[in-house]
Each structure stands twice: as C-alpha cells, then as structure tokens.
Figure 1 (tube, protein in one colour):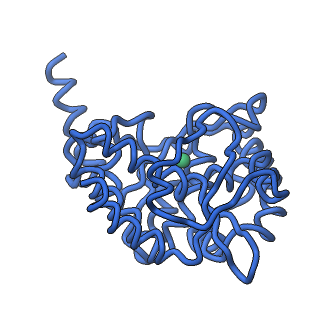
Figure 2 (cartoon, rainbow, N blue to C red; figure 1 turned 135 degrees about the vertical axis):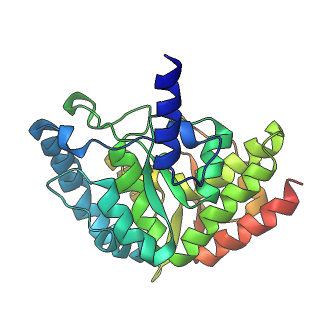
Length: 261
Ligand SMILES: [Fe+2]
C-alpha cells in the first residue's frame, strides 16, 4: 500500500497548490456532481429562509460579497467557481477540506488566505442546528465576508498571529475569543443600526432573530474585554461586541499580537 499512500500525498499536495505543509493532507477535491437533488433542495430551503432577514439586517459587506462570489439560491456552491470569483478581489479561496482541522493546519490555511471549507451538507432533519460546521455554515456564513478587503486582511493576519503562538495554549485560547466574537458572532453598527456579519449569526435563523430582537447584551467592541470574555459554545450568546468599522478588528488583530505576547 506504500505506493497508494505516496499517490495520496502527491494528490493532496497538488490540491493545496504546494502552498501548505501541515494542512496539505486535509485538502480534498469537492465532488460537486455527487450532490443529490434532495441536497440541492435542502440548500435552497436554508438560503430561502435566511435571505429575507439578511437583506435587511446583514452588513453591507456581507451582501456585496454574496453577490460577488455568485452564490445561487437553488443549488449548492461549486467551490472552484466561488474561488475563481473571490481570488481576483482579495486573494482568498474557499478550499475544500475533509473535515475538522487541527489548530496548526487551520491557522496555516488562514495565513495563506485559503479558507478551510467543509463539503458535506446537513440533512433536512437538522435544518436548524449542526454541532459541526457544514458547507452552509462555511460558505453561506463565512465566505461572502472574505470579499471585503479589510476583513480579508484581518483574517489573514489573525491566522499568522495564531500560528506564531501555536505552542502556547493560553494565548491561543484568548485569541480564540477574538475569532468567536468577530468572525463567528460579530455585529457592526451601520447607519445607526446593528447589522450582523458573524457566520454563526448569518447561518442561524434562531440565534440571529434573538440577537436582533434585543435578546442579548451588545457592548462596544473592546479588545481586552473580548480576550477575557468566556465563550458560550453550546448555548445562545449572552453578550456580543459591536464594531463601528472593520478597520477596528484589523487593528485588534495587530494589537492582540502584543497583548498575548
Ligand atoms: Fe464558523
């Protein structure tokens, strides 16, 4: 089986374009033709349910990114097509991976502007919640924001900062909170209103509705507070942090480098 392993390594290395080391074995090809009509129908229902609220309450950058990367409401995204539209704009790609990545592989991909993207889709019975991210969370929830140049720079820099402290669990835990309260559950003030940009809010109808209805305390973004704020990974968020612009989180990633140092 040695030759099989060698072939596999060569293939995964090719798929990452030779730009990855620790993450290379996790990169796969997306078999878009294998998605069933039922899976496309589930995607359509998920998108159809989220868009009316998001057209009103998602931030401008998310909605612009959604158009730019060419997401379709009636079929699952082909990641090669998404990346071909996204890369010329910010250098990011939506790169298919086999599943959960260890921290070093995850941060290596962010630092290379390659967003690790799962290819499986939740079943109809789990429409409201999946414990693990799927393609709906990853592409619909995350990828449109990567078309914004400032957010794109922030996320790459965040990956580099985390990669630089990969052997320091305490620093990584604090930096994980910055990711949680921005990339996953971030909100921004635009034209005097709270708008959502975090993928956990974009992709979750229940949690987003609760936040927009005032069911969660919203504080002004403050890096030190965020780095010290415990995360609720299995319950609804009691507190979120609103930025005034995406420059604020870009600067936070720069400042975090020295604060966890
Ligand atoms: Fe996420």
